[in-house]
Length: 154
Image (cartoon, rainbow, N blue to C red; front, side, top):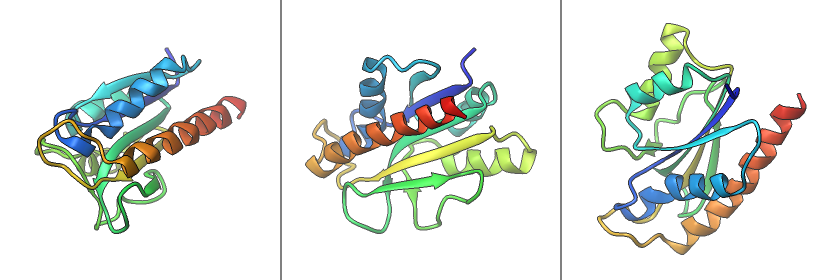
């Protein structure tokens, strides 16, 4: 079993909300060693089950946050809570933020949990991704690979 998992979250039929899934697909094509990469719809209860099997977890998702479209927010969810002004997009009742905080209260967080949230612009039905968000996806791709390499060296 790999110690690390990268979870690309989103809905590919809601414009910018697809960016977590798109980024995960790009990461899969890099054939990362020592890391599993999956796509996920963002259901918090399911995420808790998945990350309970890993020591290092990276979540990639679109968010509505203060700032401009394409801005990348990196949250160390072990050391800090998801900011209140952050809406990590999910169509599920039990959100990512709630899953993290529930896991924290239960003492079931993985050793490392980072959220890479890309500020989205359009979350309507459709397939078009904003240019700013696509550009940010490339930045997140590099940042995640760098993080994975840091963990491997530790």
